[in-house]
Image (cartoon, rainbow, N blue to C red; front, side):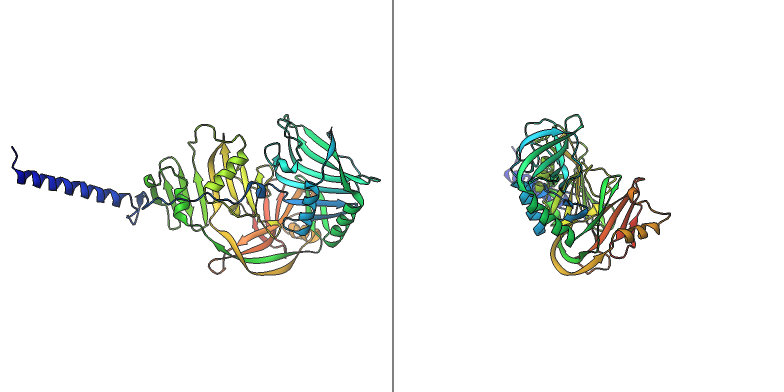
Length: 437
């Protein structure tokens, strides 16, 4: 029989071995290495489910195009005019729908509500007043309130496509007063007139004698660790790889999150997504995913690849663009982009900054159609305006700005039918960037 003191010694040695093993395991999984690859994180950090942006906030017209006679204007989100026109649309009470494949010509009033995603019975149904909920495969991107000569009340047209991709327009009568709405539209078009031309994308609109705000914002950044951990099923079983001075990769061997501090960007990939997800609609999947991974600001509006205002060579399924003072930020790096397949998010990227408070703002004049054409002609030969599509918005500038501040500069985002892209300063027409596509 083993003497009692030997049993005591062996027990003590065993306890020491177990204790040292636990300490070594803790150090290994606690992110204590300073260089190279690291395994694990010190403690899991739960990230609460975000409430913003809400589904309704992201599904709204990104602009309202008003035409009365030969006058045009554009109504922007956040304005009193935007609230008025969307209020008219939501309370129109349409009736007696008929189906057509063409819009009537010679309307005396035409107010077009432009959406970045197709509306159907599952997505954006509040804008359809019940129509479309029973129409399998039908979807609509543009809703028009219009009036013909001699009419006393307006009609509404929901311009969409059927399941086969063919144009299918539902036209409905409303009780909206033509004289009242025409008077409002004429006043708005006189106050802020726009030039309009047909192009390869549809139409471009440029303000005449327009003004915008040049805005400096302070911004905040999300806490990195909880955000990173939210993408992994087991946050304590991931490896951290310092790729270079500004870029860090986190992976569990399947999913990966890259943080680029130089560009202030987060990119997520999960190429091994499995079975179908919870939702049949990718848009609902996207909103749930955003909420589970830090959320986003309330100023986001959703776009699909067809509706996007910028060229994104990565071809995301859905993109949520930020709108400031009614205008989009025309920079892919400012968008929340998702690539979705069978209800699973394969890729996601987002900025690591969120606009906070206005530091200062200055009203500036923006160039109109003739000055814009002159700026484009400096690029080469004589310009045919119909071969160019133009979007007006903001581009973010951080170079030479104080820490924690970002400037939003008015800019024209110009594309042509050859796939070229230019970003022009909307104040003086100077080229900010080109050759993005």
